[in-house]
Length: 308
Ligand SMILES: NC(=O)c1ccc[n+]([C@@H]2O[C@H](COP(=O)([O-])OP(=O)(O)OC[C@H]3O[C@@H](n4cnc5c(N)ncnc54)[C@H](OP(=O)(O)O)[C@@H]3O)[C@@H](O)[C@H]2O)c1
Image (cartoon, rainbow, N blue to C red; front, side, top):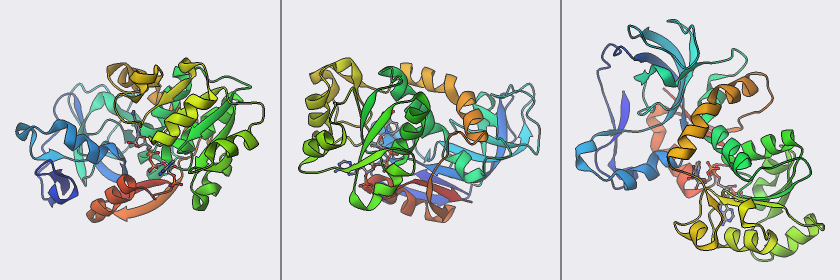
């Protein structure tokens, strides 16, 4: 079974269908999916593709599972992968499925200490967070203002920034403040009066601003508090905001290259318990639309994973 988009107009266009999974091609691995990560991009990408030639379009991007077959001569992302091994696959297009074929280069050994659910929610947000810190060169002693700190990206940024030795002031709704403090951040509520709360939390100022919320308030507050535009970054602001104000926006081939190169390092960190994936919802694969609604409308307050 798998989820596909039969049109490009949102959740209503998604369909759960039977599919025959062929033997893997020479450069592929067949994986029995144990958990699939749900991300906003899984749905957002449909609006970007919008080409009927791409239909039906399989949904999903990251999974953890068990290797069932390996193509002749396939070279996996980590060496020595065999049938029966527990693995993580990212990118795994069509990951909302019971079983899929994935390019071998994107398949990595899953550390035994890392549960399938956490493994399925690790790489997209984790490598994005790594790139965020790298691009603005977060260093020991920095005081970071992080918009959207209670979300999945936020959890990863908080943990990675703490490892560097930076302090993070993280914006959140009141109900999710615990999501920020659990990973060492200082929670403050977003909304009217935000700048006053930043001042109270960081009387000596902010050196870096990272935006995973994408609101006009996030952009305005970042610009107000950080004069060096080279140390302001967004992954979520409306198109044009970063260009207009001269700060960083992630995405495109440069980001893909950076993040792909970081996958093995991040898996090792998670396997050693150095970073955690905070899972808020576990849903049966049949309820993929519920999961997508949670992550696109907000309020998931952690990673959503699907169980075939
Ligand atoms: N460009 C890239 O490469 C890239 C990569 C990954 C993700 N993204 C984007 O980054 C964003 C965050 O992803 P995610 O997976 O972390 O999503 P998420 O888990 O849903 O988190 C969203 C965050 O935004 C906060 N938020 C909601 N409404 C807000 C408001 N009005 N003002 C300030 N904060 C608000 C939420 O806080 P509460 O829940 O506490 O309200 C939460 O902390 C998404 O837009 C996603 O598409 C971009």
